[in-house]
Image 1 (cartoon, rainbow, N blue to C red):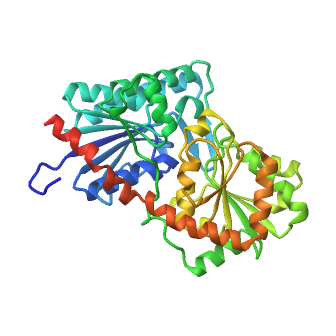
Image 2 (image 1 turned 120 degrees about the vertical axis):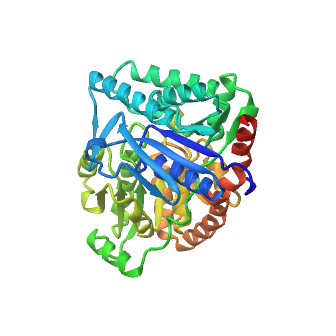
Image 3 (image 1 turned 135 degrees about the vertical axis):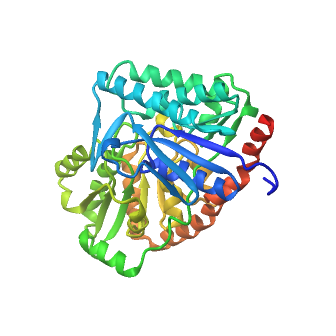
Length: 412
C-alpha cells in the first residue's frame, strides 16, 4: 500500500492459540509480516488453557493479540484433555459467541479465518455479513481427517464446515496443492484459490549459543551420539511417530551410538513411551515433552537429521509440514515420506530424502545411511539452505501482498 492510502485493517479469527503449530508457525508470522507491509492486524484467538492464561491481551511486533475464550480441547503441560460431548458443545457455543462479540467491536477491512472450524467460521461469516467486507478462509490442513474426534457427530460437522465455509469466502488460501485441488473439486473457481505455502520465520529460528547447546545436550544425556530428531505433536491420528520409533528400533542393534530425540507433547506421549519400552530401546530414546517455543531452535541444532514420519493418508496429503522449513533453516537435513507436496517442496536437486510413506523398513535404511555417511548429510544440508530461501515468511508475504490489496480495493 502507498503511504498516503488508508492503512488496511485485517482481523484474524483463530480456533487455537499461538503456542499451537499453526498458530505459532503460520498465522503469527503471516500477521507479523503483513504489519511490515503497512497493515494493521488483530488476532482474536481461542486458548488451550484459557482460565489459567494471565496474558490475554498484548502486542507483539506490531500485532495485537487477544485471547477471548477456551478452545475445543484443553492442554495442560504435556496432557491434552478432550471435553465430554456436553462440555464440548457448551465450550464451542460460548467461544463462538465471544468471537462474534469481540470481532463486531472492530472495524476491519478484511476478515481472515484461520482454519474452517465451526467457532471461528461462524464468527467470520457473521462479521463479514454485518459489515459487508471480504472474507478470507485459510485451509492449511484436511481438518476432518487430521483432527482427533471423540463423538460420532464431530467428524461430519468438521467436514461440513470444511466443505461449506470456503464456498462463502471471497478468497481461499491453501498451503498445499492437494487442498487447492480439493477446493476445485467442491466447485470453487480456481481464481478464488491462492496457494500460500508454509514457511519459516527466520528471525525466530536463529542459532543458539555454543554454551546453550552444550548444556542442553548434557541435560538430555545425548553425549557424543548421533541424534535423530522428531519435533512436533504427539498425536498418532495425524502424526505417526510410532512409525519412526519402530524404524529407529531396527538400526539400534547395529548402531548403538545414536539417540532418538522426540520433542513435543500430546495425547499419545505415554503410548509412545510405552512403545519404546516394548521394543527395548527406551535407553536410546529421549522424550522432552513440550518445550518453550523460543527454545525450539536449539533442539533442532542438537539433531544430525530430523524425520517427518508419514503414512499415505488424506491428512498427510493435505499437510505442509512446518518442521521441514524449520529444519532447513537450522541447517539440519530432513527425511520425509513421498506423499502430497513433499517432492515439490524438496526441489531439484532434492533437499529432502524421501521414503515410501508408511514403509518403516525403508525409513530405517535411510536413517542408517545418513548416520553412516557424513558426506550425504553435508549435501542435504547445503541443499536445504538453498531451498529454504524460497520459503521465508518475509518473502512469502511480500509475494502475496497483492491478493490482500485487491480485496481491500474491491471493498472500497
